[in-house]
Length: 310
Image (cartoon, rainbow, N blue to C red; front, side, top):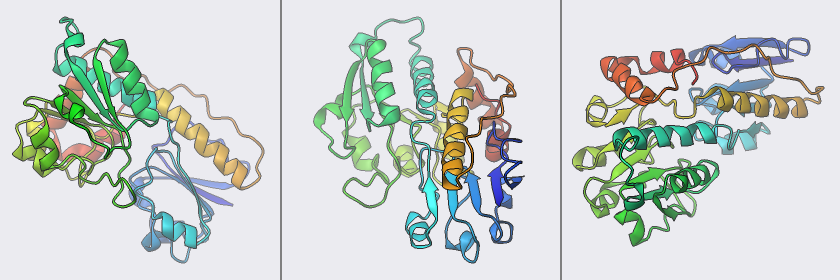
């Protein structure tokens, strides 16, 4: 059996070697030629799994160490008998921590205690949204929740903060592509802080630029080729690392490993326990990330790859 794994997914090195030929690749090395003789892929959002990559291959299993699956053509995989698994909730706490840091930092609430006078709107109450709801309540914010995401009511537009926590979908009952568009932003009260740590495309970046609302952005349209004007306007900006914590990565790797072992009837395997370097988690870490990205706007992907998990 041959397994290809994105080299930036930790805790899997050496774990499956006794069962398979295991190869760790850079995201751009997942090519049709590379996957042709693979039985299983373990990937991240940077690998687009569709007919162009998979036609003619023997791949029968794909695990993505992410919550979202918008980088995978699920219909194609279903037609080809390829089992696809994701990791819902794996990094929910990490994203919640990111949102908490963004709000406390941008609004300078570490030293000014008036959260009870501020309202916090949360669009999407799934794995991440539920944690953000709890966090906002613990800080004393008045919390307003919209779920399903398009069941918008007037209360959400009266919020001082609106944070999005939905998948990116373009069809179905509740499509979220450009959910936060020009009309949405126009209904918000002035100076509403908009936070997108969900998926690029949930927020219409051109609409953001035409509005006067402040915003924090972690997930971008067209990444890694991000819009420099959006970057310059952002109060805080990062390179799609809201979910990048040691615990979040460990959860994702464990879920992928479990699913793969079940798929191929392998004995239960344990993760590699080699400790990872600990990244910056002191107050102000998001400001420091923002500064590094604004100083190197074309290095989005390099910064993301080199990010030391907090």
